[in-house]
Image (cartoon, rainbow, N blue to C red; front, top):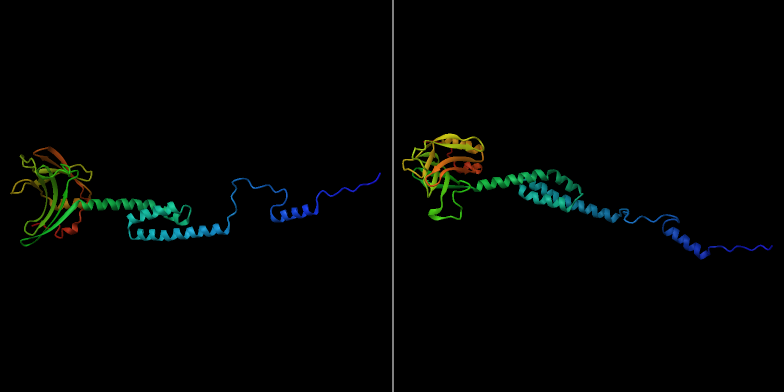
Length: 262
């Protein structure tokens, strides 16, 4: 029997192409990566991360400056933007540690400013010196703020320092009268959420619509330690009313002679 040579399966061209394929990619038999697999982080991605961290850190520095200055109302939106804009960064994580506290302080600041705006102050020349006064209206008012003229009933709590009469605290009523047929010797007064306690009152010689609280020094001292005072009165036109004054924003510096009594 004559022997026949078996021809090679692969030509030289095929082998060279296979070798080229092996050098350019994975060796034969290597499975393809599954769909959705994450590619290795390239140097460009690392550079982008560093840039993002740098931007977040720069904005965090401004946020910290606002916190240090106690400008909490400005710090809150800055902090919220950093957390939303740069999630996963070290700066966002650090801001997140203080953001809740800054929000609470910003809310307290807004409330403090609101209470301060409820007061109005006057300084008027009088015989013998200056008369200083601080005034606040009860909330809610007896009639809506849209009601004006003779139909508008207003009650104000006044703290006054007069060069002749000294310091006084009194209620004054517009377009109505207190029902003091029994003399109004006392008024029930409650600071914050305490139970009402009677405080002596006096109708001035000129008559109504003013009603003076005799113990002005104690009243002011209590008012400065609390945020609200409720006073029960009886009105000629509307019966018993509890007048609530949000007094927590009183700035005593507008009353330079506080505590003095003639």
